[in-house]
Length: 242
Image (cartoon, rainbow, N blue to C red):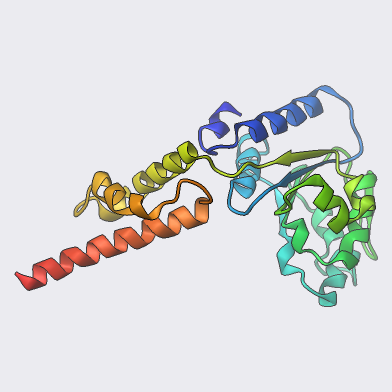
C-alpha cells in the first residue's frame, strides 16, 4: 500500500481506509462478499486505486465492468441472464480469474438493474437465468461521483446503501497535490518533447493555466497536453520565419 500511495496523489486517507479493509479481510473468515464504495468528484484517483490494488494483490486480475455503458433495458439480459453460452453477469462471475470485482460508476447504472446487486452483495451464490456462481470471499469495489452518504441513500435507495460495508470518500485535490500532479504529468511525457523542450519550459507555460483548486487528473492532463502541442508548434513557426 505504501507503493500505491506513491502513485496515487492526494488520497492518503482513502488509501489508509482501504488498507484497513484489506487487512481485515486477510485476518477473518468471511463468506459473504465485502463491498466498498469509493465516492467523490470525477478524476481523483478512484479507478486508478482499484487497478493498483488489482496489480499489487490480485496478480493484475480483476473482473471490471463500467456501469455507465448499461444505459437501458436492452442490457437486462446481461444482469439477469438470457440463454446458455451467452455473456451475462453470472457467466462473468463464474469465469472470473480473481476475487476482485470492480463496478465503475454505480451512479450511472439504471435503477431497474439494482435487484441483481441485491443478490450479489448479500449472498455467497449468485444465480441468474442460466448460471450459478460461487461468490464467497469476493471483494466488490464500487465507484461513484456522489458527494455524501446522504446523497447515496437518496439516489441508490436504502436496500443498496445498507448492503455496502464501507464508504471511502476521495477528497478534492489540494493546491500542493495539484502541483505534484502537474510536475508528474510533465515528467511522464518527457520523451515526447525531450529533444526540443525542457520540463521547466513546459511548467512555466502551463502554470498560469492551472488553478489552485478545482483541478482533477483529466483537466491537468488536458492542459499539459495543450501546452506541449503549442510550444512544439511555436518552435516550428520560429524556424519557418528564419
